Length: 353
Ligand code: TXA
Ligand code: MG
Image (cartoon, rainbow, N blue to C red; front, side, top):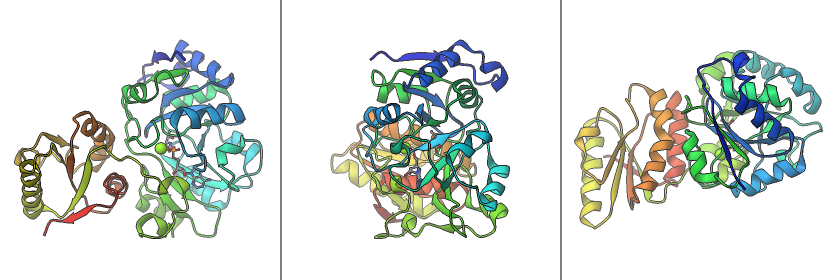
């Protein structure tokens, strides 16, 4: 299959973009049941008409995605919601008012009207309204709810640039809208609002503190942080975001962290490995390794989140055997960064002291 690639100017606003020739063509393809990748504020998504069984099953095939992992439905208009979800509970409504459009996915009670593979057989459905002019213009021009997982080959880091999508899926999808690098860099926060207390199923672009400011109590799915507990979000159990090299997360801070990282890198090099380091601007010059990658400033968690997935892809390109990554404090935006790093490291953790 030939993949059409359009470049769109993401600086323009949604009202102008809706007449962009690339967006119009992409929207027409979606309405025909084809697959189109597009930028959102978090990561690139691989979209298909969420009502079409055939289109939705093509997403799973193109990505090589396990079929028990449900998809997020993307909308540009709240009125679309009524057709296929039940009543949105008051706390859900409050979160929608505060965070949509934005990097928050709400798990709601599903009624009917979507392809069965969107929900993967669950009685709930994940929905979000992305805050990106290209996605909003595309969704409006298509006029259909769009099911879209991250547009990576299953098991690879999510794509934050159009080239990542191209590397993973060219020839397997019908179109790719290139709207430049995404801003947030990690996926949306997933929150289940079907029960009395909202439950965080996946940390992401909206932090727990911000959710709690609106919703009061928000519980964290025990399956997220505890070994041996099954996560309630099917996608969280898979080996995601894992680089090909063996990654280790080094916990600690300051001088102790730098010393331990440097020592680990030296030992691994001496043992004949190609060694990579994931660090920050503050520590970048301290290390010697085959690849030293800075994620941004420690004082700017948003930059660390934005650069994380591209850095993991660079690790693969550099054919590293071992990667040592500096850990971050488990708070704010770093909560989602640490969640992704722990997955990439498959739980391999080394204390600095
Ligand atoms: O930022 C994002 O959310 C991106 C962009 C493209 O919107 N999308 C994304 O989709 O990350 P995906 O498919 O890579 O991740 C969706 C996550 C999975 O962990 C899935 O299990 C969970 O959301 N999910 C979807 N529907 C669910 C449901 N009904 N109940 C629980 N978890 C659900
Ligand atoms: Mg994904």
